Image 1 (cartoon, helix red, strand yellow):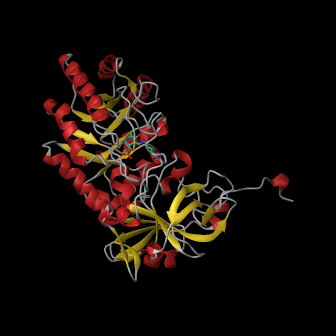
Image 2: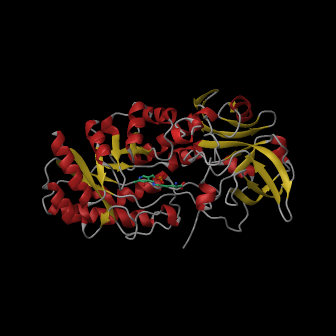
Image 3: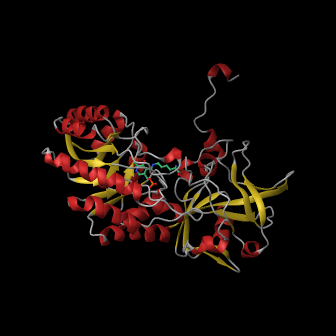
Length: 446
Ligand code: LLP
């Protein structure tokens, strides 16, 4: 199984090469690593570490790049940010101001999207196991579209909508059975995956759905996987199958108003080939364009990933029997991607002097009591001292949202940088908050 997120033996990019591709970050002789106009060392001093920091400028630039690629291809498209990758209110506000809607996967996300001011009619609800309460909430908020993933779920939606006297706009999520050649844990478009209905069964399910009360069928949806870097072939294959299906549905006299193309566009964490939004827009245009329908996109990582970093301080450097260990104060409970997917994240010292010092291989590890709490192996880094701060790059997507409090480690704060301004947009969790909600039963209290 190909695992493009995994470490390979090829040479890692240098600090300069990593920063060159991330224009919101720059290394200055005096200020060290700067995000937009704010030295990251200042943020580390003010809020402590570990801490997540997001660039509003990068979020805006990336949202605009994606929208203009779609417009330039002549597509009528709406972009719904997959907020599972970053559900910070301030981040959502920045993206909502750029005209992005939200793709939500739970009632919790739906509430956060509404709190960020994203209107119901700009929200799409995906997910294989929506509960009755979540469907009710979606209908009450009059959201744009529910992506249904099974005939069973469609029956549920029909019953709930009818009881509420509402009509649910439902798209059918189709599993196109293509291999997006991404990491096994995040591929979704193969027939053995749990997502969507099987391609061959979709037309019949769609026809039955059209006859149900409380449901307005609006189209079909797909999402073939995440961190797709292996070119456009899988996208093209999936969208071509969708186009064929739309034609068949239309021929059967069924209404199809739009196609939801999902998300998945990958980013170069290390030096993977980076598919561009233009390439994706081109693939959509070539396959779905002739249908003349509006399309929807649900990108997450491509927009938010490169916009964020995780700051961590070096606790100590320890010489093991065969390795140099750099122990930092962030851990797998903060950024789980390396432990979970063998993901590679750039690690850059904040100090320009450190970044220019001689490099040698290091194991970068967190303090959690698991061998898996390893961020990088054999990474070329300078000698680091306690208190030195490093930035883990591309931590804006699937970073803070996947954190846990494992080892009773409070959730790290989030900071938004916007030009020369910055603000804490989520406070660090306190130890009191960690204890909050815990109860000792009365019979153990004495
Ligand atoms: N739409 C649906 C239905 C999805 O399931 C996903 C992601 C997206 C959109 C957004 O995909 P993106 O554009 O961000 O690739 N935790 C993993 C990634 C899990 C992705 C799950 N679904 C990671 O850290 O790599």
